[in-house]
Amino acid sequence: MNKNLIGILASLALFILPAGCSAEKVELNDGATEAQGPAIWRTGDEDTTVYLFGTVHVLPPSLVWRNTKFNEIFDQADIVYFEADVSGQDPALVRAISKLGFMPIGEDLFSILSSSERDEIVEAIKTLNLPSAAIAKMRPWFAAMAITLQTIESMGQDPESGVEQVLHPEAKAAGKELRYFETAEEQLSFMANLDQSVQVNMLMETVRQIDDIGKTIIAMDNAWVVGDVAGLHDIVMSDPSMASDEMMEVMLEKRNQNWVVELNRVVEKEEGVFFVAVGAAHLVGDKSVVQMLKDGGFDVTRLQ
Image (cartoon, rainbow, N blue to C red; front, side, top):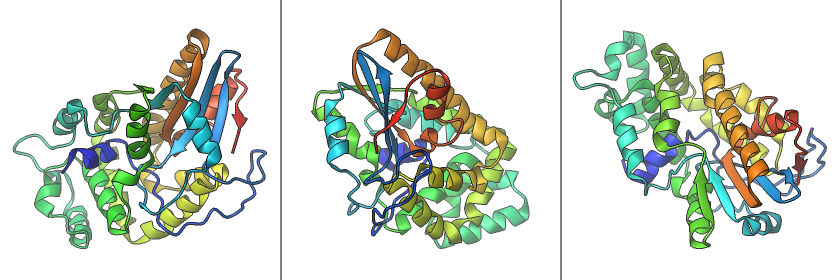
């Protein structure tokens, strides 16, 4: 598995965009009546501007999601924040995967599953050309990510076309300062430290959704590309693999809280223009980064 694919797995590909999506008009629930691209918000104070942009981690190369407004905003930024460095250039990412993504020596994934669960997984991965011997070496959370990514790629998606994979080298080439909310190991630990039963449930729900993932992808695509924040939130909340309270708290709520603390510090202590590019799931709903900033007294304005 190459480093960039490991990076995509690490960043938890919750949203993907298939080719052929059109930016159709939708009625939004948060004041905007029309969106020409994925949602962008602005906050900050008199000497600090923070733009918030929700990303998807895997996209088809043919999809055009950028527009003039996005490019103007991104060009302004002095500093760009990502969730973690998933560029494939950070050796710590590979070390973290080796440490957190695989079963201990002498153990295998199938030994912790029931016979019916094993049969479900083996049957499902046959269609994906994933060898069961490779999956057997993975911990449940990482097996779920591998199966998800393989399913997505089989539909024509390309990890190299994901938002972070495009913006990271572009920002670096433009001389922008790159910052990360989390280290590679911290990000992977959120999944790896989940109770084993929660990981197994996530894995089994992933396997059981393989046949329906196409419809879900299209729904996510249509919501994200036109900035339908409410619709995107509904899709996230209906995902059985994210349904448990523990998953929502660990994967979204706690991380959002940590990021808001950092953004508070940025606005209070620093000057300049900051661009925040994080998974779209983190910017929708009543426990999102956007809502937490509003609850903390920030004026957060939807730009598109």
